[in-house]
Length: 210
Image 1 (spheres, helix red, strand yellow):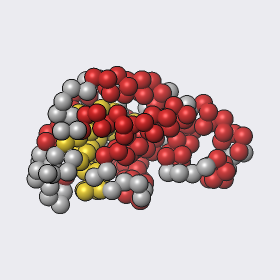
Image 2: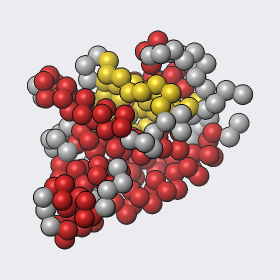
Image 3: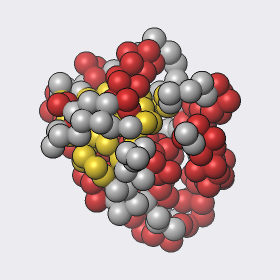
């Protein structure tokens, strides 16, 4: 049986409001973070296309939500109106070439269709399966109310936390006190994000069992 994988189709929000140079640097930095994270097992690593977008295929689908939130935090830290739309299709990848743009399969079609759909919606992260998933979609709506409130400083902290850094390391990295770092963690509602990520694999299994 072919493995279930996650296809990501993501594009930068408000891309035209920034110079091509700065947005290009932001995207490249974000992809470097995703490439270097040992938690993510890529079938196809993230690759920029069309200037403001990237596609990728992740083998360990349990980590897809961590990846999506990390990608957004990496971009949101740069400017108040900078963000990413992330459309995730989870299913089979029947035709997997060496590039996402020339590959095909159920997961690619689900991701592409969802990418078109969420451009009309406020939500910035969406997941599509071959079966209905309204409960998970409702949970993602609640997740969005947390993410959309992050300031650039809070996004910096979330990026660090998602990469496994602790309060001491975050304080040193940002040249702030540990109490200031702890305050940013608390105000970003990290506890809710952490709890969601811990339970996400169980939620995901409800929709991936065939």
